[in-house]
Image (cartoon, rainbow, N blue to C red; front, side, top):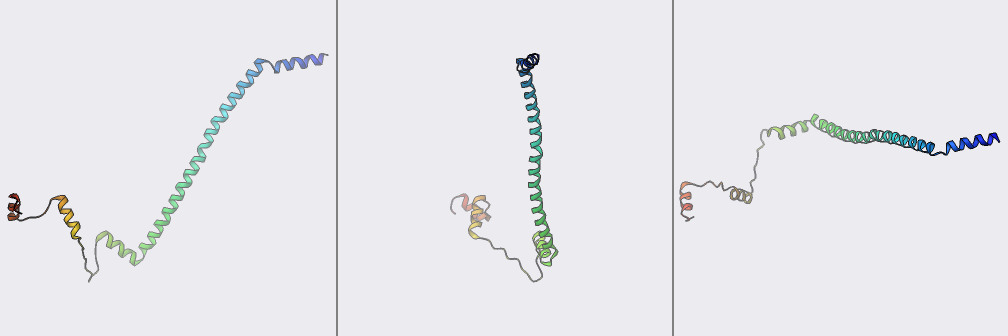
Length: 129
């Protein structure tokens, strides 16, 4: 009987309101701590994905630059780069500039910068042109 009464005291202590409140508080603090750790654990995964994207972009850029360097090591590449940057031509070559007459007229009408002689300006002033 004594053993039964001791078990009853222990059960009463375990199922008391105070013990339940205490256990709930411990649960809340534990969940709060776990949530903080979880939020901190997400950061490295996000950084890892951003770093892998950056690495992929840098590898692509490296491949492009390597290809361009190889192109510039050839005589044709050097020649093309010099022609683009400095606008030079070989001996015997000539530069031909093609001007579209309709585009030229549109530019002049838009800017109003048509070159006229003095006589033409005078005629235009009186509206006889």
